[in-house]
Length: 138
Ligand SMILES: Cc1cc2nc3c(=O)[nH]c(=O)nc-3n(C[C@H](O)[C@H](O)[C@H](O)COP(=O)(O)O)c2cc1C
Image 1 (cartoon, rainbow, N blue to C red):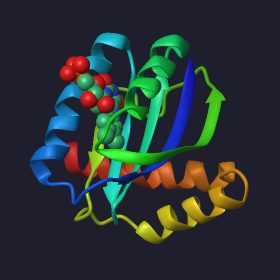
Image 2 (cartoon, rainbow, N blue to C red):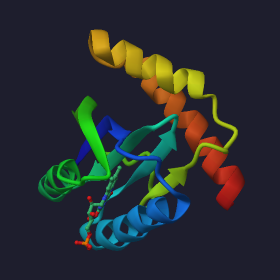
Image 3 (tube, rainbow, N blue to C red):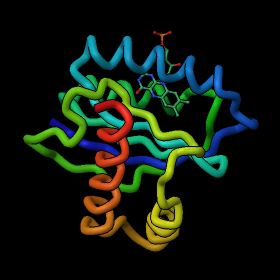
């Protein structure tokens, strides 16, 4: 399996129903392909983790690259893995009004501009997301 984390900019003010459309097609396609992950939308930015079998996951990423609803996709982290972080989530979501520490996300992005995301911060941020998701969805 492979895990990808990327950032992008949402092209317009993205409305809740547009986000819902993205999540609806993501969940439908990803569950058919064995892809799991999370999508964060905040401050005009997306951050997404995709994890799953290498070829379908890379193909999905390439398809997402073409989507006009965002631009400037930048991979911040890519690695092989044999364990999922987002087991059971065909696409979890965190929107801007969730109680997430967005400072961390911005720090991640700034770090990425210099080099690559430090694995420790990546893992720590993801653990926090998981806690929030579990609180929300049980
Ligand atoms: C930020 C962002 C994340 C997306 N994530 C996924 C995803 O995880 N899986 C997916 O199939 N489509 C995702 N999409 C949507 C695709 O770009 C595309 O619109 C969709 O897969 C088309 O699905 P359909 O051919 O079933 O209509 C995403 C789009 C955006 C803008």
